[in-house]
Length: 281
Image (cartoon, rainbow, N blue to C red):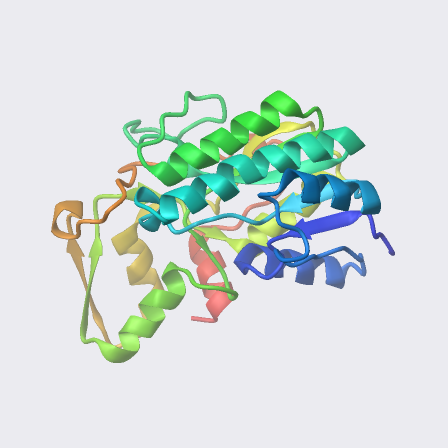
């Protein structure tokens, strides 16, 4: 199926790579410009590019994701330049040509104080600069656009790019013991599951709006690490967040409800199945 009306931004990142490979298996063609070819932080550049190629669907996998670096300069400026202003530019230009935009957001838009799963319509209250910039991106999309999908996700991992699973497997090669926080809870998300839902939403013409996608089940970072390293000769020890201080405040309990996605008929594997399938553990 030839289709040059699909545009992927951040096409070489861990999610963008997964999405490209998925579309290729369906023989769907796409545009995948580099950040040099299409700088989303420059509104004029974005408008000219979209006006020239007239994409019908834009998968925005481009983001600044260095959560700790985003707390201080120069990361703070880059975070807002890409996640806030860059998203505003995309939303404005996409609306001008009538395109549908997929914007990937984060569990960090919530403060992590709720003890049950966060629903799509719960009030956001981000506690770090990354979450604040991503929420600003959400607001630009909802205020400027008619045709959009905002997909919040969490604890993303996959075969491509840097992520927690790869870090744990690497540390296991050089350490006898690894300490991992046991008081932050969430839901891991395989990039393949996320990419599949993005394509599903587009092809099934799901209602526009906000969705939340993560693999089924929840865990602490410690439990996540235990599963990843179950076949490795390394001891995983739990610690508290106070024992492992980080620059950016993380939500303690940021489990995203996937009820809205499940109601569409999309099947979501468990996070354990996803990790084992992705890395053949």
